[in-house]
Image (tube, rainbow, N blue to C red; front, top):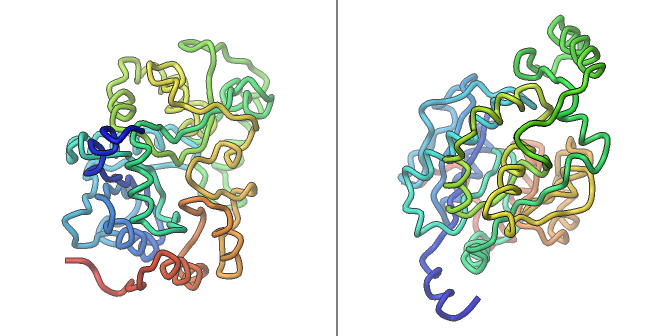
Length: 311
């Protein structure tokens, strides 16, 4: 980046987009950290109590038209798009380096002021990687077969009629094969990205949004497909980094993601996650990760003060 470009970007800051549904204590702790460097726009799952996630800070805004979000389903895309549109309406795009998508169980590993500088320095880069779905059978099955996470949602319980019905339908769905309309190549990547205002503007104004979502309604985890595929076929495709692999962790952007996707990090993992060189970690939660977050706050040269809200 030239000196003139650095001068133009010096007043930019990241804006954080949060998808939250549980653990309001941890989500509010994260928000209090993030507002030191950028605005936050929050989508609270419609099944949850919005007031439980609210902090009184003018730098935090909450999406009012909320989505009932279901794991692995098309509603993940709907909630993310509402976050994007709210962010574009509330923020001056010329002052935003990136819109960064986080969950309430993400947490910064390094100084957020340092991240703000990093974001300014890379204001023309979209941090979203992609893997061709056709590269492996496992990925291809995400769209080749029929999945029913939207209509028969996952609720975490082992034995339910809904789970049995979903399993039976998905078994039948694997016997069929779907054609692939709209794009010659579909792509996959991590749900957690950092995109430029130009990229976000392109995604929210995509003219065939309804058709793509209609096809992906019966796919598995379409939020890890939709945005990546659209950008891969956009004028911004040169800013999207292709990678080799077949897992979310292979396509991680600024996050440390454990290959198990289910591991919760504890204070004993501190050295490991700091050594990763990443900016954020998934997953942390109140109680099980409180001591870890305290150490990470210290690592960012900040004093943890999770009992006080910023006025």
